[in-house]
Image (cartoon, rainbow over all chains, first blue to last red; front, top):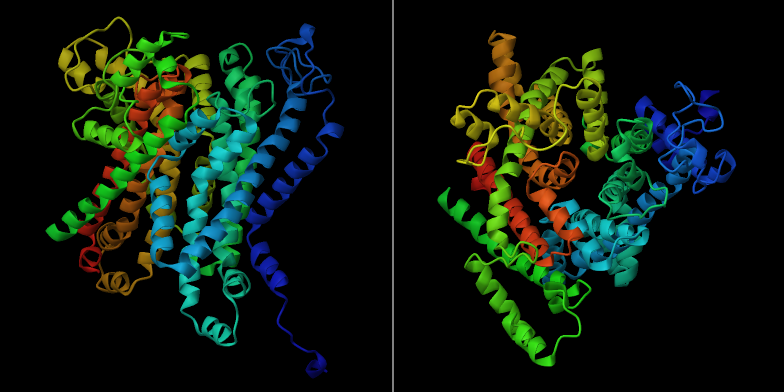
Length: 295
Length: 336
């Protein structure tokens, strides 16, 4: 009866999941990331207080597990008596929003510039490649600082600055993979069949460049979150009283001796988020891009 | 080899030119009138305004201003800091040894621990040690540098009271800088305890700055080593009956190190970016700290010159890495 079973190849999504699920760390990272996403989505239901509300009689209260803590403020309060748990929970929204918007924008721009570079070649290619090289020749954080100096510190400008810094990676990947694909027969066939430049670029070639791009995008979210938090910490990113994790650390610094929890907890939130994304990204790379696999 | 080196160096010229263009444009995009920013004067007389405009060359056409700027750069004129009224290049060179010392120790820390850990993880592939180490490396790789610094301060300085919180040296010591590297200068000064003080001040910032490179180097060493261990010549070396130590240490490691050297070089940018954060946390008087200060003081000439100098440095480090790679790996210098 075995002959009755049609052995169709698994669908690409299923095959990807099968490859991904082998890596327990990656699945763990995905679960943690989904949890953080849920926390961010339902922040207003989870937080016991408003992240901006100041409880003046509860300044720098320690978390519930330490002496002097209470369940009213499970993670304690900060230097002006704001509930730390509410701020961290709402902070997840900011960090994830920054991370994802940076990646979405740099992906969109990167794909267009990279494809233009690969397809047009010549002067366009040289111009785009040289500008990207130039951007990459400045240390990431230093470039972000320069951009912030020009457009001013704010949450929205953080996204702009970090996007400028990380976009060249996407351009390079798209350019390199598209160039390799262009030499292949199926592209020539499509061209001979009369495909226009746009169809050729976005429908024929782009899908075949996606694997390294998806991997870079996944890992790019964590880089963007770290970079944005660093800017916030330096006072050049999201401005107080925005409950952004980096900015929270910046204002908490001086209370490190009196109330260590105001320093440890927001940083822990950054670390957990970034580690989970990196774990997932590593798993994605192994599943999608076996050539890059680090045994 | 010489032609490779020359070609590689020649390639930096357009990059450096473009970098100077970038900083030239950036400073003009910064909001605020350059004369008001520089002089802090509002409502000054038209004659005075004209005088300053002429003094700063702002009455010239833009292309002329740019050429003047590049001409100045070629003569070591990176502008004048508004705050100190000192040459930006001089300020940079005064502060740079502190950053260099910090970076060298951070890199030494990263290489000394990263390479052996990577090799051991590769040799004991799949063991608890391997998994544990790569797990730790993942955390190191994902670490928010500024938070890591604060944690170490909290533990070693606040709780254990082992290391100082900021600066490069205890204030009771004073000596003229000779090399600018505090560890060497303190030894030369012959003052009791000065060297120890310098090391104690250096140790936490170096660990903080070295953590991400350490993780990157350990991961790279491991994967490169795993690849090399599969090679035929390693099997041959084993078959010849060489001791495992010789096989791994001599035959495998030497070849595995090629991509590791590239990784080390690529960490130059990470170090310079990390120095901004590390120096801010530890009030380390280096160029990263200075760069951030100059933003808050609206000292844009200092920012402009500083960014250009730091980027130039990174470009030169990358050239050095490429040349080093060509020295180690003949395939690179003979390719193309």
